[in-house]
Image (tube, rainbow, N blue to C red; front, side, top):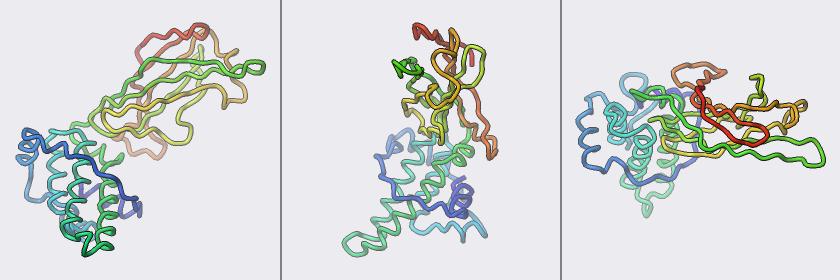
Amino acid sequence: MTRVVAFVLVFLGLVAQPVTAEPRARDDMLASASILAAQEPLDACGGRKLLDKIVPDGPFLEACKFHDACYRSGALDQGRCDADFLTDMQTACDAEYPLSKAGAQNATCRVAAATYYKAVNSRFGALLYPGGRTEGQLGEITQRVTGHGGTPHLEACSEVTNTANRKLRYYLTLHDAKGQWIATAPALKSAALQPGETRRLCAGTALSFFRSAQNMGPVYAVTLKADDPASINPFGDLVSLDRMDCETASGACQRVAP
């Protein structure tokens, strides 16, 4: 799995900036045993033939082998497998190119490690993570009305949590009482969240020329959507995951089927 994803993004030239590693989740004895049991002989960074030349193992062979097995085992979610992958690669850089003797090579090695990490901690990595789920949840909706003295605009905000076992890209959408779309947040780029990560998103009428708090109707809907990694669609394939219907006057909301 690592070999395919790394090939795609490295081939496209997506060079990543170095990323700070986290403590390894796989140091848990049960998780480590499960991952080791899932290893296969062909696990590697690039795999065989052409891919092995384009995505060389370098000092990362053991890290790639463990990462492949981590995905396969399901012992850890995608985000933790990827974080451990980065830590293992950075450790390999320090062992192969000690800072005291080979500082420039160490820095280059770490840039390569960050590139490999970005290749797997992505939409493509989410696609290849076995048993990957597409889930997410809205927190409590809070609303505010701005523009007093002028055109009043309504903004609805919620904590969005990735409850899935893989990295996903989320959007918050706002619809009026008739079900007509008003706004999407983020406006230009999705909110990419690791498993278990939470982020506050807000959608409102302020960016619309024709909509305001006055013409939304008595109720509005806030829906959480995610880009389904299983669909390779340049325009995205959004799946509705959670929804809140709210009263415009009071801001009181209740969860309904998306």
